[in-house]
Image (cartoon, rainbow, N blue to C red; front, top):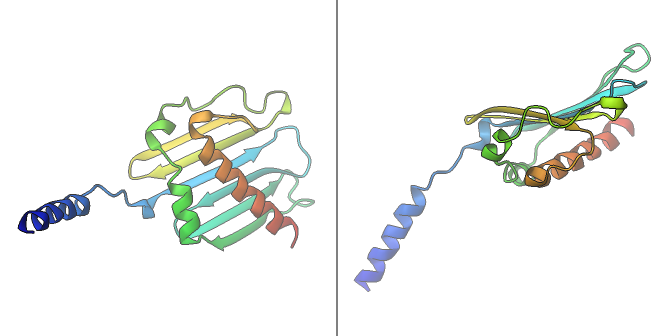
Length: 153
C-alpha cells in the first residue's frame, strides 16, 4: 500500500509539473481577399480566448460600408480551436504559398500570435494544406457562421 501511495504521489507531481501552454495570450486571425471584386472583397476574423471579431470590408465604402460582428468566444469553442494550432508546423511553411489571388482566384490567410511568436501564411483561396487542414477547416467554419450572422441581420 505504501508503494502504491508513493507511485501515485510521483505521478501526481509529474502531471502537475507538466508544461501547459497558456493560450490566453494567443490571437488567431484568418481572412480572405479578392483583388478583382465588387462588393465585400475583404473578410477578416480575429479570435482570442474572449472574443471573435468579424469584418466584411467593401472596396467602395459608400455602397458597401464595413460590416462588423463582435461576439464572445465560448470556452469550448476556443479550446477546440486552440487544440488545432501547432506553431512549429505553422513556422515550417513559407509566408506565401502558391500564387494567392493570381487570375483573381482569391487569397486566404491565417495568422497566429502567441508567446511562441507570430506567423502568417497566405495561400490560394480554398487550397488544402494537409498538415494544418484541421485548423483551416475550423477557421472556415467559423467564418461561414459569421457570414450568416453579418449578412442576415
